[in-house]
Every structure is written in C-alpha cells, then in structure tokens.
Image (cartoon, rainbow, N blue to C red; front, side, top):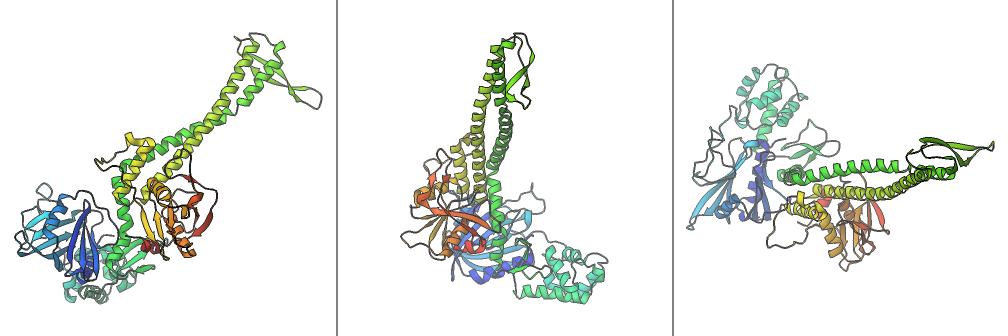
Length: 587
C-alpha cells in the first residue's frame, strides 16, 4: 500500500505534537534517498526519518538503527550547513496532497534570524526532498529535475519552489453534501470506490473501499446501488476526523500474522486488525524489514549472484561425484574376475575374447560349481588379463576413497554457503555486508567479490548486535561468520553461555555472565529466541535451540570462520516473539 494523504496528515499531527520547537542536533544521510534528523525535543532525543525514494517514500519518527557513511553526501552537507541548530517552527501539509512542509527557525551566515523550509514530497516515483529559504528559493534538492526530465515542472537550486501540478480532483475535506450527491448521481454502474479515488484527492484504494464498506456492508458496491446520504455521512465523518486530528493507526494482518495493509483509521472490512500507538511506529513495523531486505538486495547483488552460482556449481559437481561413487562399487566385481582368471589360468590361451570359467566359490547343492562369463583382451595373455582386472579394482578402490573425500568437501562447502545466505538475510548495515565480502575473500572468492578499499583503516573489529535481557544480562549476536568468530572466541569467557539453532545455519548468540550468577529461565528463553530469529528457522512456530558453556566449544579443524563442534549441550524449544525481542535490543 502507498502512503496516502490521510496517513500523511496523521504523521504531520504527530510531528507537530512531539517535535514543535525541537532543535536539530545532527543530520545524517544513511542512504541515497534517506535523511535522518536527530532532534532534541522536550521529551528527549528523537530521530525523524525522511525517505524520498521511489519505492517506500515516507516521513516519521523511527527507532530502527541506520548506519551512516564515512563521508556524508553533498546534499547532507548542505542540510548541515543550513539547518544545524535550527528549531522546528511549523508543520504544514499542502492542501490534501502528499506534500509536507517543515518550517525551521535558523540563522544565516551573518547570524541574523531567518526561515528555512524542508519540503518532503511523498509521491511515489516522483518523491523528492527540497530545502528552500523563507521566500521559497530552492537552496538544495535531493533529486534535481531539469527540462530533460520534466517539461511541466523543474526543481533546481536557484529556482523558486512551486507545488506539483494540481490534479483535476476535489479536496474531500471541503466537499459539501449537495456537490457530493450531484457528482455521485453521474457515476452510474461504476464501482463506488473507483468513483471516489477518481474524483477526490489523496484517497488510497483501501480507504475508498473502507468508506464504501461502512456505508453498504460491501466493498464493491456500484454507485447506483448506494444510498447517497449514507455514503456522504461516512465520507464526511472520515474527513472530519482528519480535520480534527483524530487518528487510530492500524495494521491488517494475514493468517501468518504478517502485515498486509495499513491505514490511519480502523479498516473494518478486514477481520484481523492490530492497533498501533502512533503512525510512526506503524511505519517502522511496515517498512523496517522491507527496507532492510531492499538495501541488502541493492548492495549485495554481486554477492548473491556469486553464492547462487557457487551453490549451483557445487551441486552439479556433487551429483556427478555421487554417480561415479556408485559406479566404483563395481570394484569388487573386477577383483572377482581377476581371481577367476588366475584360478582357471591353465584352461586359457592368448587370443580368447570371452570365456566361461568355473567359480569355485559358488558351490551348489548338487555338488557342482557355478560358472561366470568373463570378457578378455585377446591381445593379452591370461596372466596379463588378470592383472588388467586387478588394476581396475585398485583404481576403483582409490577412486572410492577420493570421491568420498571430495563429496565431504563439497557438502561442507554447501553448508558454508548456507551460513553466508543466512548472514545476508540478517545483514542490517553496509558494514555487515562488507564483513561478508571480506569473509568470502578469505574463503577464496576474492577475485569474484567486489571489495571496498580501506586505505589506512587496517582490519576493523567485527560488529555485532547487542541485547539486554529482562534480567539485565548482556547478549551478543553475530550476524555473519566473522562476527560469530569474534564474539565466541574473542569476547566470551569459558563460563558464558552459547546458543545456536539446532541443525541449521544461524547466528552465534552469547550470554555474558560478567561475574553474575546463573541467569533465570526467562533470560535463557530470551537468548534462545534471539538465536532462533537470527537463523534459517526464522518464522517457524517452534524452534529447537542448543545451548552450552563456551568451554565446551572447539573450532572445527581446518574449518571456515564461525564453525564449531560440541558434544555437551542442553536444548530448548522456543516460540520467538519478535516484537518483545526487538525491545531488548541495545540501540
């Protein structure tokens, strides 16, 4: 679902209530289309995220940690120059469009008080973020629009800011009953929800269906079959609530408890609703996982392609090796043929191509022996033919041992690639992806993995996720094999507890005792839940997790980073509550 004007009105009301008068402490641009303003409000620090990307445009407060680049982009530098220390003076939604204006009290280069405006246009592929002065002159723009891009509206530094071209639609907040009924009378057999979205500004498809559902009990009712007065009463109530800033943000959940729709009011057309305390918190829940997956997909395309092709190559190789291994089982037959030739050598002569030999090991009840037909090379003597079969036997025996070894290596390589794929799914920041690239380079993929140069930085310490259990214990979670290696073998001590999902690739999770007594059962459950979430079993209703003391772990001899073996452990079956675990994370 796209962010509509009604939900933007809810976000504007929240920003105005929470941050009016707040000062900007820091400005970051963690992604090309994303800006984060760190505000000092009367209730504490808040992070205002503005995403002007084409796929997930939005604005609102966020609790999701985002990593900042070492060198800020030019747009970020311009914002810092103009807005550092500025105070939020006003929040305004332009008309009923998806355009939000944040007005700031700041000072110019000479120290005189002045105004600046940050205009967030949340309009799908046309989304943009524009900084203007108090008179509307454009000072900086995230995505410049020139004549080659649009002949209708240019957005460039130095020009005067103008709103996007108006649509041929009416403002639903200003619609009177007479005009509404008059327009409805000409809709005919057209579905009422389609008529609403075609005639009124800023209304999403799901909101239009909700209005029709509240008026008729169905979402696809034709306009001609509706009671116009009833439809207008619902219409007027919905937009009256927006005008009075009465909002009830809610999510629609599917059978798997995954969000499928959201809105600023209860969507009574659906059964499973979940109300959220604020529109910003709802957007965090809706976009958090989507944004992370999109960032990983965008930044790690070459790594994903490499892992996929490596997996296919190893799988094909294993298939051939297993076929050869099955064929090598014929080695015992070669030995038997050689033995038969030696036992019947007196009856053979050079030049025979195929002979029937007595098998003295095949004794039958009637006192006779069985026979076996053996192919010979007529160019060789009987003894040389026997030696030829013995050589085939020895070759198959050697091949069997080597194929078994190669198959074990291939299976270990597939298991390693499983851990890399799990790490890619868990990656949250550019540094996580950089560590995965470095790990692959160490594993022999350096020539095929694009590395980021680090002149003068040396080898950085791997990062990790940190949690604090309800009992106050620190829990560290590695999100790739380098992080797993670091927290397990560099940070944890021998009496700390180690957790890992059973029989699947996943993160190492370490609970640090730090001189405290053994944790209560609830803390063990929380640590095990973290291990279940950061694993290939994420999303399963119940997950078995092994846990043991660090002193029982041993590195796999010659194994990849993060691979360990253990023989003493306990197991727990958990059903992770992702939201509860997310609240334990140390930001």
